[in-house]
Image (cartoon, rainbow, N blue to C red):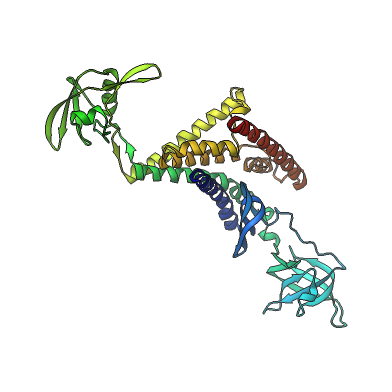
Length: 419
């Protein structure tokens, strides 16, 4: 159960941060965001706040932000339609009832002659409640259409994704992967603040109860000046001498609270990868510094970004097979293994997964954020966007291929772990 909870928390954080990036920068650009969803498939929970419906969906395989102009839920009101209109205090249409008009006795029913709720924001028609000529009704920018009892806010063209500048659209898409790198940075900083940062000072860290250091009388915080007469300038020097002298008496010259001491320590022998080394049961010294924690956040994020790109390079050169890829099942199993090592390792795993998600989404693959950005790059070169229907077809094919790849990878994971 703890593994399930850990997986849900990690998955939820990765998806929420990713989609939050899209949401924040889309709203900053003035794009109407209809829905912020975590997961796919049927809705399990939904709550409307402002213009956006926040939902949790059944299948934990991603999430999305549904932006006006990018979703299929466009309402077309054609001439001859009979619709109901309701008005706000400024006598502008704020509700357009498409069917079941009998449930809204106060609405004004008209036969549509012309309607434009994207650019002109007008509806022209003949009212049925009186014998009058053609009338024009102004539509509020925040009006809603009602169909089968469900409300959907209209999207004037200036609130649609396509109406925004290339820079605004690019940022709205790029912000998702960007936020995954931000999440990883935050996680690494928190780890550094809580756990501390290893230093290279010749100073003893935590002492294990069953180690040779504890038996000899060494204490946490002791500063090592020399071992067997050899001057010590770093923690690396301490580790090197101990590893090279299993079962040998070592004379430690230390200072403790300003007092010099000489202590003899005999490292225990341990075999690691066929080699016999010495250990005394001492952890490296750590330092807790907010400034260094921030620096560590940057360096860790850079390091793991570089590692993942190196693995991608192996994939391109053929040194990386599909059997080395993991889907949700593989990630769950890996999370279960990492969780056994403790909360800090689990947090680090979450940071690595977040970077991985950010990089994968930036790849120029149709249906992913990188595929969208690739089309924007082509638009910047051409000076005009590619036909939306052609672009949509490319993304649809890309999505289908990605789903096929996910099925193959998931089946490999199931065979590897359960069969």
